[in-house]
Length: 298
Image (tube, rainbow, N blue to C red; front, side, top):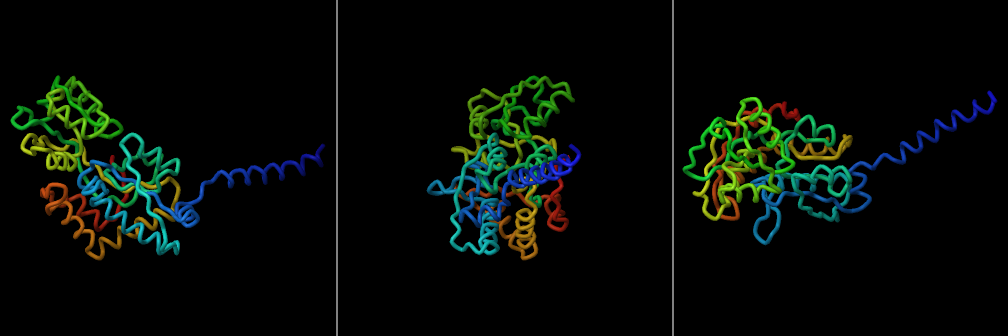
């Protein structure tokens, strides 16, 4: 019996090790090199990060940065013939689609926070924003306290819903919080009077206002409730791909191209209506151009 066990135990250990290795998914770079394709995810209405422009094609600040990343992937893998596939994602499905390998990288307006960091990886932070409110112009709602007992909408799957729930509880505001399927529906609820305010990242609210049929219908109000970083989303435990992505961002910053892209998308007229968001770079982002941190939101 002792002899049999002395043979069986090492064999079991070898089998367990083999199974563990077999279940480990390939790295993104290995996957892309073998398949000859990379799938890049975008948002349909996250102006100016990634959204549908002329001809229904994705455009935006994040989309262009991901284009630079794809160029580097081509170089590193030796696949100049790499096929670039695009995939629209929503707040609800973006993390599952990264996890199951449907998409390889997401270039939108995803907040880097500790909870999400348990499920996915994030690049160096490339924008900072805060939760504010979109209201109908002229409405007597300027501060968080003005929303006491009011209907406030936010988009399903966003951190803004959690921020609003916490703020309502901490300040005893009894806010009637509504979850909409996407940013477009959230804005429509405000426009139609079915919600008093839309709580969302301020930069996205400026984009929604700018792209509205009549931008003067809306205004963005309130102090930012919480400062949060945006980052490009990657699969968990893929150190080689994260190193590549962070390296591209660092190169964009050191070369001055990052600031050029920022000026193009935040300080100049952008499609579809040629409206300028006039959103100067925040002090937090300026600091991170030097720190190159991927620190999540508190």
